[in-house]
Image (tube, rainbow, N blue to C red; front, side, top):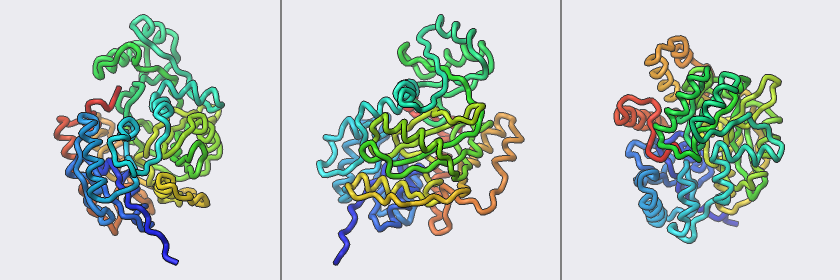
Amino acid sequence: MTTPALPPAMVTYGWCRSSYTVVRSLAAHGVTVHVADSSRFAMTRFSRYAASFNRLPDFYTAPVAYIDALGEAMRRRGAQVLLPGFEDIELIMRHRDRLPEAVQVALPAIEDWAVAEDKLDYLARVGAAGCPVPESWTVRDDAEVEAAAAAFDYPALVKVRMGNGARGVEIVESPTALKESVRRLVKTFDLPAHRWPIIQRQLRGRKFKLDGVFCNGEPVGMAPFEILRCKGAGKFGTSTYRRSVEQPAVVEYATTALKALNWHGMFNTDWICDDAGVPHLIDINGRLSGAVAVPYEAGIDLPWLWYQVSAGLTPDTGMQAQSDVHVRWLLGDGIALVEHLLTGKFRHALGALRPVPGCRHDDFHWRDPLPLFGEAADYLYKFIASRGSVRPVTEGMVR
């Protein structure tokens, strides 16, 4: 009896290491994988596992043109399963009718996705379901900022309601710094009063992530891992070095949170423990995480589960994760090195250089070395185009 061929897939956001992990995973399962991105240097373009590369407009600046170009690329390549690698998932939800009718994609309801992506709105929904969340305050004018600054225990976090990585998030140590931070973020990103930044008590315990896949409100695969190093000092910002762990409390709370959101598809979450060791959910993203290589290398193949849910196949739910698998974002540590040197944090710069024996990588594999060079070229181009920013912000990324 012949096994039916698996439907070809299109993976977007091809410049990013998370999409690269998806390409590696699906190709290993015999799926023909096409990739798409707006950057000519997209790292997946140079992978031996990619069947084709398709150049698209930028989805932030030209959303409708992006959707139309994506639909045309899928028709041209014969791709049937769509795996959106980033926040283009919102565009796909809103403009599903502009894509080929037969496209298969795993999407939550737009209302649930919007709650998950908003750093304020998710707190009430998942908190009411029993998932611990940090204490948070909202402000809408200068008077409320003044009152919050006077009443707050420091340090604190000031964060925009929708951003990416550490963009739009600042740590403040005093009332004056808090007020300045709010004013700066409002001005920089032109935030209306109803979307001013929120203020949260900063938690300082162990930091975890949990990535996973849900199918119609039920988990089919989840994997926690601990953050050991980030691009920013003090484990702030995007993680660059992590290890797989057993963390049943995080798994339990994540299940509670995503069930409360009726989730369907891919997601990632961030957690920080309080002084008593209780993990608190500090962020939800309804998409791939940049660190999805960690569960993949540890034995939980989340991209494959995501593909199976998207294609209407029965998910392989029997995977077991191996603990203490260390995975490093190689280029991310390089970026951190530059940032620390530019800001005079020489001790942290040495930490970014420290070798990690036996470590695996998000963005480098001996059998497929070229994507790392494409990734480096892409980041260098963006660094130059942004006049030296190690965290370039595209219009529409923070809001």
